[in-house]
Image (cartoon, rainbow, N blue to C red):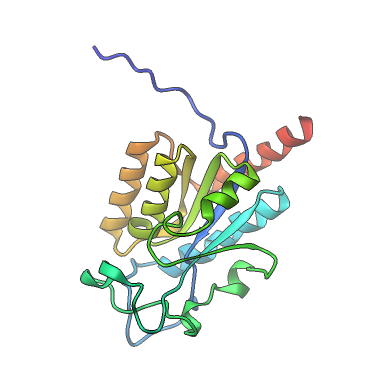
Length: 212
């Protein structure tokens, strides 16, 4: 019988940051065309991320907003248009803006612009994380099976503890969403966490910080 050497981990290990991935455009607005497919209930899941953002601010946990942005001449899309997705997140398009009102994005917040799916690829995201001495990434936003998943994988391979708030992420479809959550849980046991679990861990995190 194989020995289980997997260590027991807390939801938050060391310093944490809340990573808000690609919550852009407008919520609860009917669109004639959809450049990127979204699962049912996607907007409600994005709106729910506000609870995590508010709690993180209350607990002095850094909030880092990730924004996908592409040049108008499409030169930075690469292979991204070879799949299901159409042209999206162009510079200057109102739908590219981070949703400020619903999720309380502020000019003073940490803000990373990216050209690819992963927040780590071709950005200064890791420089920021190192400067903040972050060990645990708490992920929310979309898409579960694309930008959230690929950011999680790169975080995992860079030895961060990665947790995905499953109430506050949404995929391109329900099947893709669930499959991505299972894939992330495969990489780090305990990666899938409910919003209530994360809020409780944030409360404990503040207590521990005050005690240290």
